[in-house]
Length: 153
Image (cartoon, rainbow, N blue to C red):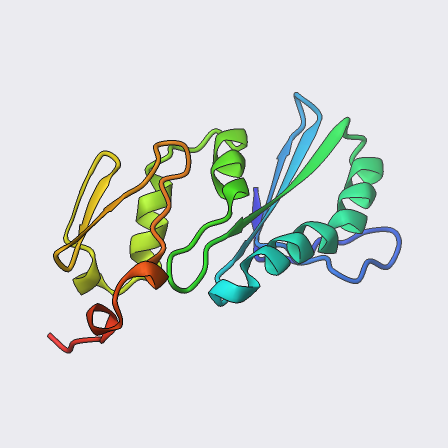
């Protein structure tokens, strides 16, 4: 496992510093993970760019390390906690717990906005939001403006 490290290749590759690189030599499989926190209106564009950005690196790694498969995953969560539908699929493909989804949202959303979380029911500043179990997405843009004001505790 490598993180935030320059990956050296035989040929020059424009983007060769992904956030996380996992290599399983027994299964001859490689995984490139890149994490981003863009603004909400750029979330899908950022996800596409992250995957395309490391395509050449994955081809180089496959040949150089004699791997059967190198997969690239983009874990993108907006600064407001909005996720794409691919986020949950990427989490499942990586074998991670779905608890990472609300934890990731809590990491980017100010603490005083999140009150309690029960299954797929979320209470935010006296506004009740329901999320589907498949996506578990909280979109704060749907809240009234007065609830979005930041408060100093």
